[in-house]
Every structure is written in C-alpha cells, then in structure tokens.
Length: 199
Image (cartoon, rainbow, N blue to C red; front, side, top):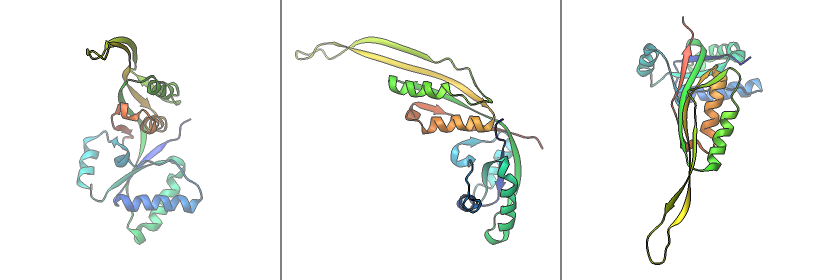
C-alpha cells in the first residue's frame, strides 16, 4: 500500500521551513521523502487555496510529508513556534494527484530512455490517453553543388502525450523520474495537481 501524504501550510518563509526540515531530519537520525509544492511545480485544485496562496505569497510555505512522520513533525513545529516563529496553519490529506505530459523525441537513445520510464509504473498509478507513435523515414537531403551529392539521412521520431494519475507517492515518483532523466528537455510536463481531502 502506498504511503499517505499530507500538505502542511505554514505561515513561515520558505528558507526557514527548509532549514527546519533539514534540522528535524538530522535530529531524528533518518530522512524521509518530502516535497515543496511551489518549488516543485504543484498546483492546488480549489480557487480558495490559490487565492489564499496569492495573498500570503511573501510568508507562507507548503510542504508535503508522509503520514508516518506527521505527528512527530507537528510536535517539533509546536515546540519551535516561539523560538523561530514557525506555525502550522492547516493540514490536509492528499487524496490523489495527476499531471499531463507531452514529448517529441528525435533520437533512438532518448526514445529508449522514455520507454524505460513508462515501463515502470508504480502501483496505484495509471497512465491515461497514452498512445505514442514511433516512425522511421528515409529522406533524401543534401546540397546540390559540384562537390556534394544528395545522400540519404535517417529521420526518426518518437512522439506522444498522456495523463499520469493516482496515489500521490507514485505520481510524484513518475514526475521526478521524468524531471531527472536525460530526456527531460524533450518532455513538457504540466504542474502536479493535487486532489485534497474535503473538510
């Protein structure tokens, strides 16, 4: 079963929250997966969340953390509230996430990288509307001059688009794999969209 994640909204600037998280992990002697929405390309699903984020842009930070450290993290924040001015405004469970991607690849090496990414879909995640097209054409190109001749050049293309949707942990894994892959410059990804629990 995939790990549940929560979004914490803190009325604290990003540099302070980032430093606090690093100190928190060092203090507990182990690390965990976390993600900053604004820094990583995540969008909220409700207009209210977007509007509140706009109004508090100068001092508000959101962070996604796993459920198994949530209680300990909240306790550490509460204990540090007076000393560093960190405070949790809201906590919401992430129900699911999704993003859309589109790619144009013109070398077989990069196409192989893309195929490898798409062969390893995490449990709880599905790919929708994905039908990539691969083509190889022999085109006659060249310059018509006395010292040159027309010569055949292989033309290769691998193109496609789709949606990746499902449990946050698996969708985030796919998103980061694409962003960190050698072929990332050939892939256009939307922001990660979060579906949050209803209050």
